[in-house]
Image 1 (cartoon, rainbow, N blue to C red):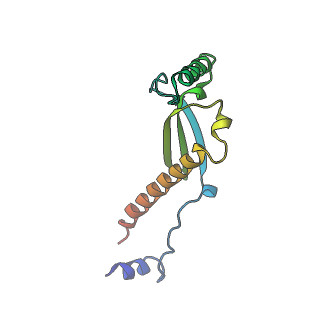
Image 2: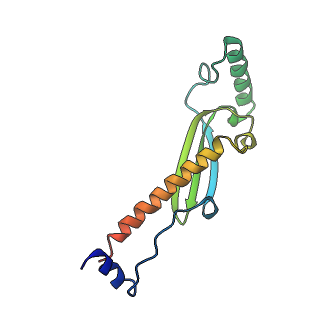
Image 3: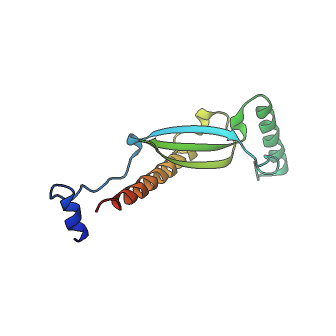
Length: 134
């Protein structure tokens, strides 16, 4: 039996509907900031020595006061029906989570990457399930 005939035999004579990719509206996104292993001294700015020192001082003061967003790794997850996709970015320095979430910034790009990763995981599972049909 060829694949088309097999698919029709298992679906009341019809071909199964093609699967669509998930969209942002289908998934739940989450955002986590974690301490970054990359040292901020020498890595947070590349303008000039004075600007570098000012930025490093600001980050040190913010971290000392408990602002994790001053120097962190950010992880965005996209979840749907038990499947997860994720994307991460290190060496981030922001005043707050709200500043990171500002439209047009890295958050939008990480959401798109996490969604693409989720779609890939779902497609891979779909292909694996297709192998079970005979």
